[in-house]
Length: 261
Image (cartoon, rainbow, N blue to C red; front, side, top):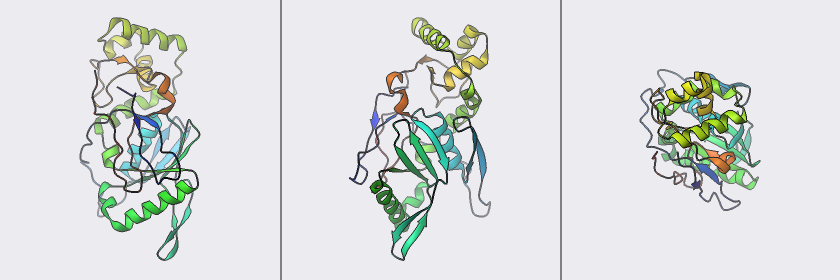
């Protein structure tokens, strides 16, 4: 997983753009379980180890966003439906509540709107997002939009769900050092071999979940999964596992192609 790239786009010109270490992203898959009006809204709660509480989500895309926030080292904290703002509109002032608020390790605040991509083609929706972006940027915050193109990676989400319980495991520094040295020195090792090295699958899972050891999140995790030394290193605190969109056009930010050695 190469993470030596910074995804950067100018927001609205009022402040510096986000500088996050975005990992390579594959092409998103088409959602196989769309939510329709006839089937109703899908709601649930995400058990966050990072936040030590349940995070409410109101769509499958929001649930997938929670997984990405949970596993991205750059995200120090996140919360849902954080606060309501009043934005200027043709009718005067309108209420707007972002879906999430992120606090990065840098201390920067970023508000997030999660929307199906098709809705970005609506002039009314785009106008509202642009108004939110300008309003929040003027207040010194960032504003990003996430769609299925940034979130819909079923294999990655499945791997996140397998590894999530192991985020709470404490990895002693000497275990991390030993595992990294073993992968570097031996090369071409598998998850099964890592499990045998420490005698416990839980230790191996925790090393992967907490990004001490790298593997391809976009391939199914199995005993034969190939491992490599995580290249996050000094960029860990600003490493982000998701791409995003910023105003005024809300086109995708550029990210490196998805490739793993």
